[in-house]
Image (cartoon, rainbow, N blue to C red; front, top):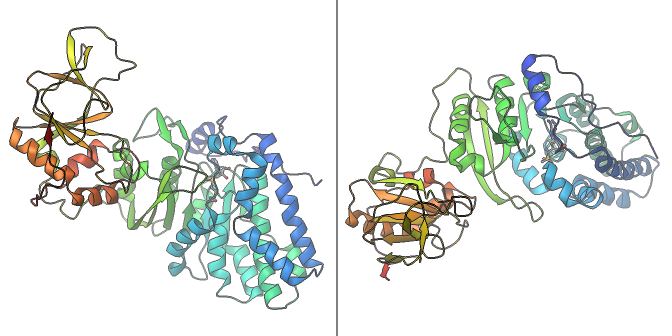
Length: 477
Ligand SMILES: C[S@@+](CC[C@H](N)C(=O)[O-])C[C@H]1O[C@@H](n2cnc3c(N)ncnc32)[C@H](O)[C@@H]1O
């Protein structure tokens, strides 16, 4: 078997910022050498397809093997050879042809002869291959091969993935030649010098040279680097990748990113979004839903351009709504998560009425709370409304609510979001219940958040619809 490049021997970083990011970038969460070496089998398989094609094997058979390699082959073999648990830990889920085509569609219209397309975490090259197909479709096979060698750039920490990306690009050219019945010998010696092993977080040169950046980075949780201005502690690594691309790219660079939903709608990423939107003008937000049947995470695509001049941060498109300038729930209600974390909060202090996700009947007006618990912390004074935090996109009644009118202060569990009327008005609570139960709210929330948790930010910015034909009328209990 051919010797494969040793993984994780990354080129040295030069600047202090790059070194800091590099230090962050050696987590135990990357695939280990044994796991990545298993994928070398797939490198061998692709080399065999290439060799058979160059030797003049039956074109129809070769083309069908190439089609597999250009579509789902790399991701399927990765799951078989490396296994899902390791992929989950490392976040190495390749985009697959459908998502990759959605990203490439946002790149294609602005491509020209001088474009350079870069993926800082390219894996087996799914995004780059989709973009390369867009370029190759416009050119003869010979021109396509010369152009692709000049304009496709990528980094990945694993050498085997870089080899797969290069082989797939060769196979793409070979396929064109086979269809055109042209000589294909030269494909064997084609090179793609701008694809190499490296860290997309620390290697800034290719970011600066790119006219287009495509990315589907790992979504794993990691520790924010010490110079992270918008967050400390745990952070989704996808947020760091996009930040690096935005900061290091030239003004005018088009960036198309496939990202986890939490970055678009999670309230803990408010500061990150302000930072991103100050530097990056977004012209398309595409909410996708679940990444794939193998990776249960909701995703979206952001496409936009690095701004030319420093601009004032705008509101995030995630929280903007058609009626953002009109009244919203936050104007009339304070919104916060219930303070009791049942398994962790000590059972000390006075015996309190206790409201939790199991005794807060949906769409009920709760006048008596039977459940009790000792609790020393903050209480909520009725009347108030609670909404369950878990809420699946597309579900009927996403904001499942209850109205609490019992006389005494209540301890509320953290699986519920508490909305307290600023003026203590029961009438406003009832109005809010009708708003929450209205189908317009379901549609609005589906547009705002695709993840399975409602956020306080989303509920605060929910429009104070003036409709109100009741759909789910509170019943007494
Ligand atoms: C979610 S996969 C996506 C691959 C490819 N962009 C796609 O769309 O199919 C993320 C890739 O990032 C790579 N990776 C992880 N950390 C990296 C880093 N710091 N620099 C470059 N690549 C990295 C992993 O090896 C993996 O191949």
